[in-house]
Length: 185
Image 1 (tube, rainbow, N blue to C red):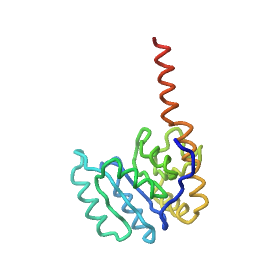
Image 2: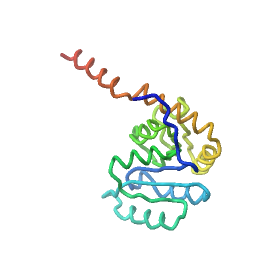
Image 3: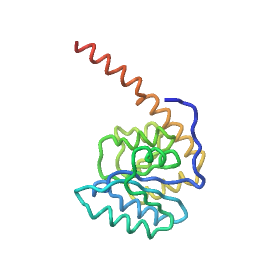
Image 4: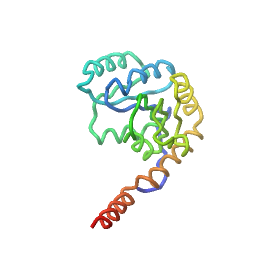
């Protein structure tokens, strides 16, 4: 990974949500967030699931009525990367998850994460990569904080990129796998 700063974001900032449209991910809370901050720009992407197939259509219908929310629906992986590049904040509304790949995608693009409940090993808090809100009211407050404080948003974005370079660089991961295989053989 190239550590050269790539902090060119859209102005005004874009708040992004991405994932599968399942009940555990609670995408409807992102729409509520967009309603709560009508002056901000929100975008969401993701695909249908077999678990709750009608949820996708419901979210799409509601999103189209919100002037500050752009609904992308399912998009191919190269366009997902574009969404992260232009966004300034990534929001996760899941009830539970392991370690979301979307966190790494966001952090690789200097995007702090504001998570409602998920903070694996308290990485977000300990590394200052965003916020883990705990309640919807705090989520709204945390998003407003980062929307209004560009310096904090940029600092957390830089922290995020440094964290990804340090902990998730493919060259380091491959080296660890090689060492593991050499021990086994």
